[in-house]
Image (cartoon, rainbow, N blue to C red; front, side):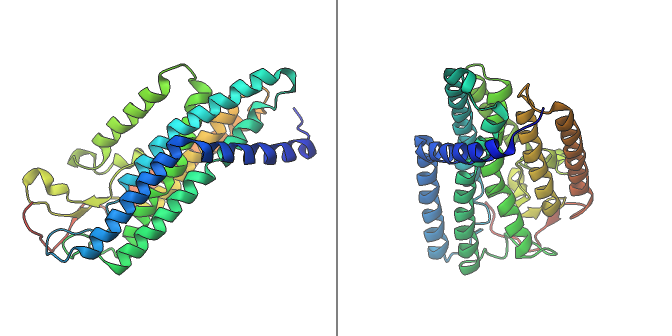
Length: 299
């Protein structure tokens, strides 16, 4: 099927602006953004005002806030925007814009949560540099601050993209009522298991798109010792971005009028890249967990 680029491109730009405005109009987005701003301010003030010798990680462990408030809530928002887009297309009848174009416009709307995530990341990195963590937390030799910043980006900014794309994917292929909240529950439950608290998951936990790379993994012993977990967070970002591309391609594939033969090739190629990236993530970086030589107070 041949697409008229001169017609599609202007239509896509108009729809993209529309979906961006729709995302910005979502009350759930502003709820999450406001709460993230409040959490960030509290973290900044807390880091500046804490002069004790206790565990103080500055903003190095704050990634859960943007992941939940931009990623998880973004999943819900995008699923709602997708259903709204489909209802509008159905009401338009024969003049409806192709589904693949509407999908591309919805993907463009992820600029909203991603930009918000980047603002959080900037504030988090500045706070970290101005009020660095205590020696018993991070960075943990042989890695320095760059390792921490990479992890903060992977766990704080990338979910602002991957969460909404997952919402788009779910709304495209599983549009039935109740699927979105069930998906949110499942994502949260699996994340709890895969975040690195269990030693048996340390080497392969990276297959899941959200997992800690350092922290007080000795919590179960009461020692509260910090460790950096195995793998390469730099290669893991490549894996996460490949998953995002894969999600977009599969969402576009849902359109029966799309060029599915070409999409199958792109999906297969992207899947190969994702598999290679996650394998390299496990092969490179730290081969085993590395414990911080500085022991902090017992928790």
